[in-house]
Image (tube, rainbow, N blue to C red; front, side):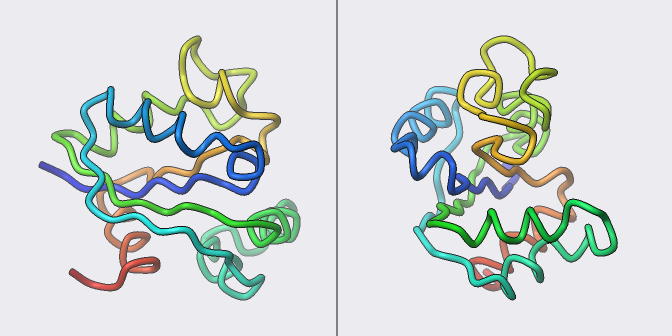
Length: 134
């Protein structure tokens, strides 16, 4: 079993899609180990997305991620990172495979409803950001 992080972003919480997304996760065999609703400050969002420092979209991403509540959760499953990335689809919903969360629910590249860790190493770091060390 592996763990990964998923964040339901402000565009999805604002459209009341939290339950639909959780249902999709559970039907795909993920166990929700930890979950909470928080509102990130701009400083927290900037720290979380520090990997994008210097990129032109960072300020907009930080403003968006601190614009409303988010729901970070720790998910567990064999091949958790890879399986979750397949379930959510490509960052750009126009390129996301049919039936993925982003293809069905995202509004744009930035407002793409969910964030998911892209590696086991990043999953551990991102989980610790929201939930501390287990």
